[in-house]
Image (cartoon, rainbow, N blue to C red; front, side, top):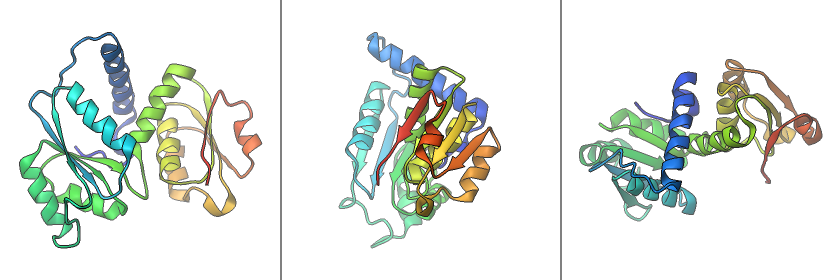
Length: 218
C-alpha cells in the first residue's frame, strides 16, 4: 500500500495510525524498546531538501530497528539521466519502502506505479500527508477527539493535507486563505466527504470558536 495523500487511508486506518503514533511516542519517552522494523531498509529520496523530514524519517527508522538510506538530489538522476520509472524499479529491488520528497506530484505517482515497495509521500507540491499526521497527533493530544480547528494561511500542500485529514478525524474545520491562494475546490470536496468544512477569507471568522488553530505565512 502506498501513502501518497492523507485520504489514501480510510478514516479507521487514519485513526489507527494516530493511535499507533501516540503509543510509539510514549514508548520512546519511557525508554521502552519498540523495534517493529528490524532489518528493514527505507530509501529516502530527496529532490527537495528538508532538515526536519530527513531527521524525523532517519531517526524514526533507527528507533524502529531499521535503516534509512539518504539519497539527495546529487545522488540520484530523477528524470534527468534516468527515467523516473527506472529509478523507482531499481529502488524497489533494494529496499523495503521508499520515502520520496519531490516537487511534482505526478513524479511521485510514477514512482509508486513502478516501485516494487510501498511509497510514502515526504512532500510534493500538492500534498504533505506526513506533516498532517504529526499535526493530527498534536491535535489529539491537545484538543481530544472533538474540536473545531482552524487553518489560517495559504492554501498550500500542507493546508490541503491538514484540511482533509482533520475532517477525517472528525474535527469541524474552518479555513481562512487569501482569495488568490485558496484551496482547490477538489480539496474542499474531499474534506466535505468526511465532515463540516467552513471556508472564508477572514482569519478572525475562521478562528472564532476554534479550540486549536494552525497558521502559516506567505
